[in-house]
Amino acid sequence: QVELVESDGGLAQAGGSLRLSCVASGRYVRTYCMGWFRQAPGKEREFVTSIKWDGSSTKYSDDVKGRFTISRENTMNAATAYLEMTALKPEDTAVYYCAASKIWGATAPSSYDSWGQGTQITVSS
Image 1 (cartoon, rainbow, N blue to C red):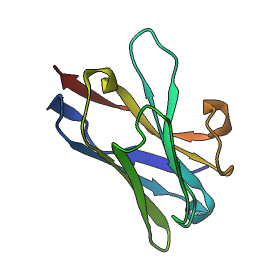
Image 2: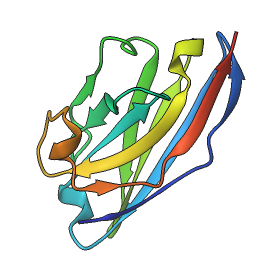
Image 3: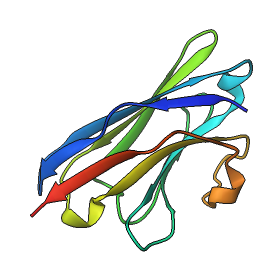
């Protein structure tokens, strides 16, 4: 497992942009894929995007494709994942979670074994 620490969330107007970051630390952090999930009130946690351990591949949900971009930077014992969110919509409002998994391409929360604390993103109309 790795430890994940997310940046603070924020508030944006519809059409605006926000950026999240997630620092992952641990012995084998560079072998983990990193992803972002979100959970709106009364809804299940849903997959947003993920990136392969070396940054060579990315995956997006249909809801965010073309609007959100995931990237990552690897150092010797840590990795930082970024989530650039543009053209935000009120329906993007949710708690966003950073997660790590050994499985590339996984979209089910159960496939991720490390989680960040969650951070609130609110988009006003």
